[in-house]
Length: 112
Image 1 (cartoon, one colour):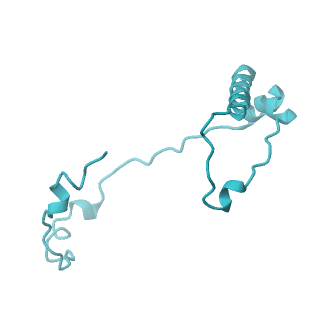
Image 2 (tube, helix red, strand yellow; image 1 turned 180 degrees about the horizontal axis):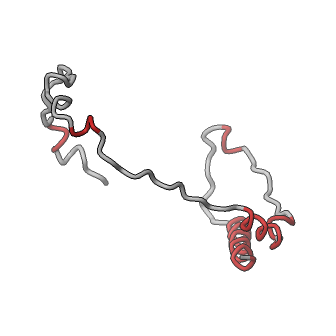
């Protein structure tokens, strides 16, 4: 477990260090709004993040339980013929569904 966490941490830190030191010519960006001026606080690695004992105790105390599924069974209303008579069912006044040109026209669905 410690090895996996260490590898992920190392890869993340390496990526951040490499990405922060790249200077490309001609890649200057103009600002469109004040949102580009916001700065994120620096990430800090704390001792508990890399402490093997912390992660071992977490996995030992966390118990993954799966809820038992109820047995499926047929109920009386499911097999009762009088329940399924169309006179008893509510039917709304729905319009007939038709295909409209935008649904099958290739020009509407073109992805460039």
